[in-house]
Image (cartoon, rainbow, N blue to C red; front, side):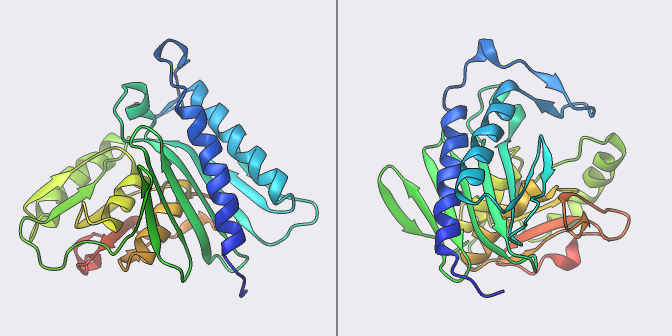
Length: 270
């Protein structure tokens, strides 16, 4: 499907701004924190309110598009357009709870062939909006300035690998055991707690590469497109349900997402 991504990017920016506006009202006394099952997998009243705000904008502007959200699942339409939005209203919930600034609202949209058309990661505590549309590059708006992103500096010394770890203790143990091998060629490692922002930080050259196992679609949808449009190589996980988004299928394919100037695919285990 060949479409102009510009109108989709405009809606993604409006929707992400609506979610980020909710997050910017953070009140430590009104978090209403609960656990979604796995230790450390939290949800707050702000996750839910931000997702509602994002969905409201998309539904108003694109009423026939399907929407997949982290907290409320997938909503399909009776007369579907063929486009589907993937939203994470608050990527980095643990950071948000503890008032660590790496969190934001992630919004992306794909066509009926699964091609990602536009993506936005709006990080209100950082004052940054990362965005991209297919074929039109990746951009950062910060403090009134707009900068086109071009990824990490090739071949620089002291390269940094960003990653994350599973809530599942068994998977986390495997990741920790393998980390030393992944570090070959890197000087250091970072774990910021937001996959969406980690990918954006590869796009803006802060990180040199990023890889993480077991991501959900809403974690990487916008950030992966932003990294790609910045000129990075990206490998996405295969999803259990491509129609509905959601979790990756680790039994069929190791769900590592990698972005950066290095060919990392051989370093991440299947």
